[in-house]
Image 1 (cartoon, rainbow, N blue to C red):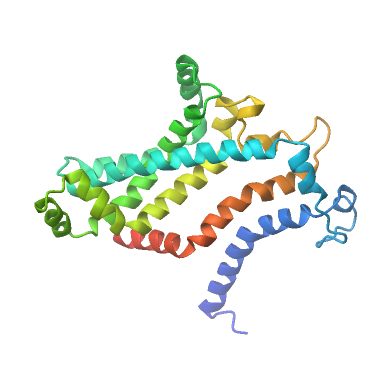
Image 2 (image 1 turned 90 degrees about the vertical axis):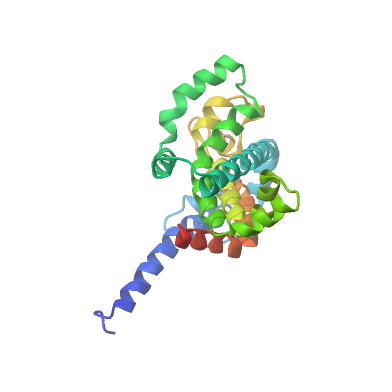
Length: 275
């Protein structure tokens, strides 16, 4: 083997990335089928010796996992719809209208997208308290959508700029308004970008923990990440049970990405090339 061949190092780097991405998920999946005794045994067993579904049964019977699941679905779905709606309007304005200082606006969008959530926690908490929205779905939908809007806007701008203006002009000549041309011509032709922005917003909201813990603390309103955190006892960590709950939380995201994999990859690469 020639170690000075660059292709070898490229394959090694690719292998490290793949292992780093998949190993934690595979380990959690295997742990969810083990018992507490097998998990703490030395030497460790990589594969479950006696696979059991008891951890999944406990996750659904001893904890309101389905309630957490429904809460996450409502919050992530609402945040995704709001994010895509606002991002599409903002991206269309940036792609088509003559707006001064566009470069500055793009720089601000990139900068805002990098804000750590913890810096927004205190002002958001005070606003939610003042509006009386604590333990309300709106308290999470609005900030989750706001956190995803900068990235979604940047993704959609690249796609909207690639749509020929003549198509919109022809639609408007036939009586379509500018907004009508946006929703009937531009958005459908930018479907990969819309899918990409939607999935990014959904995943960001589905995984978010800090705001969900602070703004929706009651047990009935907990989202999945917060509910799973409360599965641990005061002096115990039931890792197989927690792993089963993590697998349940991972399934919707994995299914969405698997079903729309080609559109997401195409959307990210196409948007990156155009940007």
